[in-house]
Length: 343
Image (cartoon, rainbow, N blue to C red; front, side, top):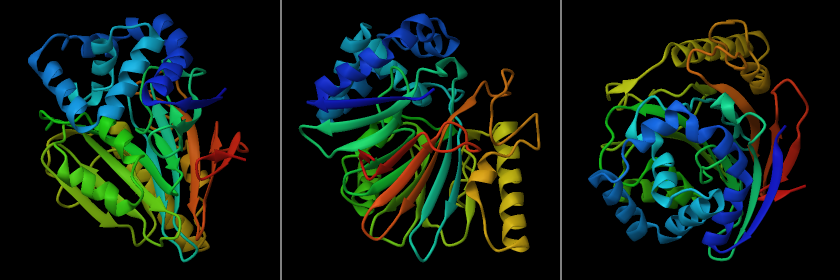
């Protein structure tokens, strides 16, 4: 079951509280997991020290949040930092996700399956952040990770969902999870895009961005060398591998699950449009017709070792962003929010 946590204070204080929330899962599961061991192989390396210095220089508030997170987890700061660099350090980090993007005259709708390590099932939540030195926001959170690399909405009505790209082109730059955390401090889509272009990047992500009062729905793919942006003009699906023309030839790992989810999602979009003209993104994200490679993932033997942790249904209207969080896309919502507030 998803938890609700309410955090407030300085960057260090909110990080500390988030660490306390995730400490049990971190010590009982995470620190003995293969993914943790992969990340810890970079302890004390030049790249670890250089990336920490970059974060401290470019995003000191996020650096303080990471320091607080480590203190709350009662784990060494470098270890926690490296865990939050996992997708920059190795391409097989257990993060997936599927997103349905629907542009519309009443404002865009973004619906998203958050897929992650099933070892965290029962330890995740929705966190509301009342920040002393930045915008308030609400985000899905995993134990031991800073917010922002999943799905989130801030007080400016900026909504973001994030899909993993298993890029093989990581470089020395700002870790991708730090970048997406920094995007939650932006007041507009333009500011978010400018930040991505102007900051040295390490790993890669796909983002869907929408904002209250704006008809545009934006799709962004980035890695260490490139940032590709395009507006979503037709109903689309993104299943965590690069789709933009300028990104398709970038070195990456495309798993069979990612490939099959993309194909099946496109099929369901076409069927919905052809049969009635009405597309139901929640039914797409609940689909399990292919039991080996389903869109909604709940198998213990998932091919990528990932399960769907939650589903977000986000609608950006003229004045607010109204969104719901479901524990399963086939069930009623567990939480309802407007912008960064629970309702």
